[in-house]
Image (cartoon, rainbow, N blue to C red; front, side):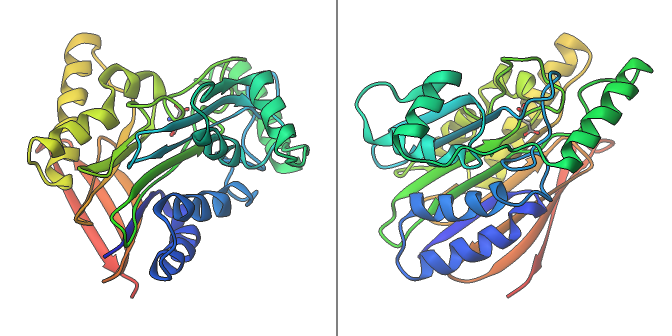
Length: 302
Ligand code: ASP
């Protein structure tokens, strides 16, 4: 048995490739990387890697993380510039006993030690979007629209699990701002004995519920991934609404060690993609605000 789940439609090509890799007995961690790299290198996806939308200073600043579900080892980088694959640095950091989480300059130095190629990540299209945004913000538009993280959780044929995230974070974020994607427990968590989860949406709110860890905790209490996702998102959404009168976007995916999967959201539609030894599927989680319920629609591609 094997499986991999990824966030947003942008993960589809990567999930297909990672599924093929897993079917050839590739490891869960490498499969996550196969998927994430596919998204990072594609400038059409403007919230991850090359072509990611920049911060308020016009600089592309990336966050990424990797977690090994067998060892609970974590690698994480925050505010990385000039490398299109921050996930490669995060994954490499899994190999060390210390210094697993690096920010800015330290992450850059580590990438250079790995001989990663430095390159300008700001494409003409992203620069233009940024210039338009500067203008729109001057006109009073909320500065923080438009974001998405590629998140993956995988199980391989040896029942090892892994998770990975990569993002340019909120468009127009403040210099030095870090979202949930590189934060263990908030943006991702995985334990091969239970399962894994990952989150995308407004990092500032995802952190308030340590949302990914909460889903894994609920699965360890016996909930299946779908129920765990729904319960965690609903609880956090309701708590934030009660305490702060609003909740930011919260969308999650999960997979357990039996390759059962789930997804939930508090936005209208949250697309995700799943490949297992049985199926390749596009899924959509819909939040039915009036009923406070989730509807999951899956379309089989194979
Ligand atoms: N969670 C990311 C962040 O806050 C953005 C996203 O996934 O939409 O940086």
